Image 1 (cartoon, one colour):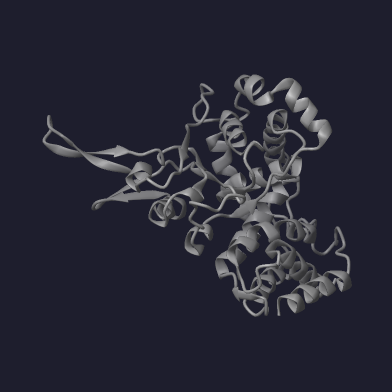
Image 2: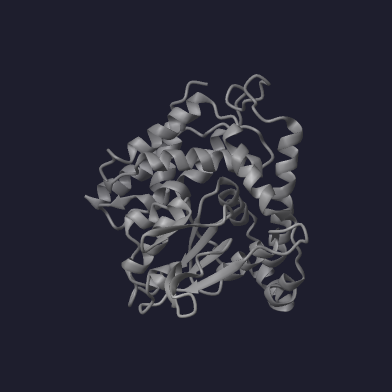
Length: 356
């Protein structure tokens, strides 16, 4: 059964028509369809370029990966990075925090890191009510989740009970302790990491938790040429401390508010829905993606368009984003299947059916 599914996926990729890079109807260049003015697009694109150029001073040779992270930042989603140790996952989160200011004085946003371990407890993340003998009352002591950028390091090394403690924080931007709900800062961004190599002593993220992440991405090894430069200069140690903020939290929140104005043709929206719907009927998938996947994909596509300097979504955006937005939300029947390759094939097939 697994071989039949894999062969079908390969045939689909081989027989799929190439996707045109741009289509006049789909680009939204008609002024009546373009909801963002040119000067607004240039402004938001400039923020993206500043972030990317400075991130690349430290995380080198990974421009495409950095564009994806900035896309998640602009879309207001959270990122899950799955890769082997030593590729710069923690450094990426720290560098990003250095580049965003939380005040007019240019102070960087608050960055906190949680090292997930098996003995961690939920209140180690969210906080706890502590009795104050002077006031004779319980006072809430905020946990590390009360920050702007949170690095959840090796999130799969702690128990599901602790993993779920982040669920409300990521979904609702709030923490409930006892009978009181505490609101988070409006600018809250989670970068979680997990090691795919070692499985001993790990707890796979439940679908309810992993579904809260906008994207699941991989950094990958650098090229030899890039690695030589990293070894010579050690940018994480030397360059990162010198980096200064290039934009503020207000700028990012403003971008998140206007992302929905990025034009997306109705045919592309229907294609997004058909891609997600196809995962529910595909023979090799035990559990398909929910409508949340459709919402997240369109949001990511619009944010990605701004990162690329456009006020409209094109079909290539879906080819790039669909695998990293949808694949981690699936439960496959055949272990040998690569979910990202499968989603890319389904996306190419759906796009080839659009009437241009």
